[in-house]
Length: 577
Image 1 (cartoon, rainbow, N blue to C red):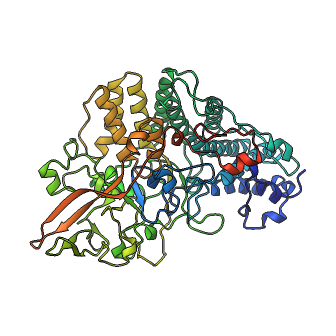
Image 2: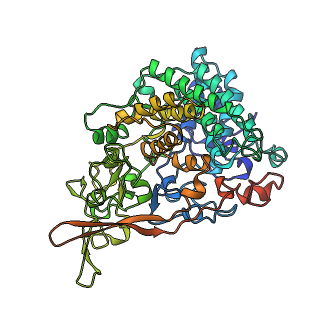
Image 3: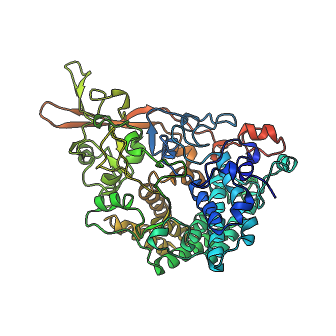
């Protein structure tokens, strides 16, 4: 019997170090033994609850969207290794945990949570639960959480060691000899675990239990994992088995399609549905992310107080226009904004004089829900990102949300700010935040997973049908394309619908589009206000020079500290030994 729970949770699995969060309000972990925790059903349940507290989210100050072609973080903070192509085993930047604002996404914390899950699964049969159904449900929850942690690791680093036991301080020799499993082995493990978890979990909970893992969440995560596994990056000839399959197989797309269809079928049969509560598309997409627990959300990291008593986010302060006293933060770049179609379904084009003269009107209405553009109403006034010029053509003044306004150092040079996830009722600098939930899985993704997988199986009609479910909710006309044009529409729909939700980083890599799309500089637009009040929009203003170091940067490098402690722990291709 291990004497102290603290010694297990603080063990640096794969040599990472750090203190654990408190497990229970009643007693610190330094005073709680395994025997006490797993000898009491209530304490064992609390141990499971603490596993949810260690699930990460995406709302640090530096969003994952700022290391791909969605946004730019105006203060940088660890994004440059990815945007400028110099990530290395000794410099992982913000992708090994967010900078300035915890996210529980570091190598250390994710492995710690996996180890804690293993400990629970080792001890759960000895706990004297009166209800076997309840015991099985907790087992299902923990198996789901363990896979979610593995998925977060594997989607960034490739194959990881499959560990199904907890370690204590006497296991150092075993720890230093651990090896990576192959990517296919990891996929098989995660899929098998999710299949078993889905049998143990309910499809829904009462309101008081919202936020727990469900069978729908297990099947939805399985859908994502199989979609990734079927993608070109992992499913082509010559792939290192640590990061893909050595035998490309088009049937993997059928498995992905079947998984997405199963997740949709079970979700729809149990009351999940696309959020379509408001007549206005803009309001609907705004409230989708502010009304927690709605029927579209399949699994989310709850935004109530965490284990250390803090809210998971202060995004309402750290993002938003500087003229309101907010900090700018992760600002959308033109390469993203320009991908929102016109309202008739045609592409937006700066070379079209009609588009360029009024670029934010008659667009896909999700643009107004996701991005704050010049002239948009926000917090009681219109956003002002225009400037004026003097007689020599030099900037001489500007709107409230420019460098000529308040707190110039927080100005968005792209002239866009994030609106998605933001609470317009927040009073800047009050730090009085309404709790928000970070969405890990929602129903819209399953339709898009299905559309992509069906297209790759040759079923254009099925792909269009799934795709158009999302477009119709967004007030956009149905897609009628076929062939390569249809694939382009599917990719763009994912980019727009799932913006800032940490899909684009992985999508652009698994499609192997990154060396094109991420080799483009990040740009914004210059908006000049004339004396008569008219505005002239000039695109192409470079705000950051960017590059993508292919092929290495399709995967993150294993941290140098881990390789140093276990020289036989294999490094990813392109980063040396």
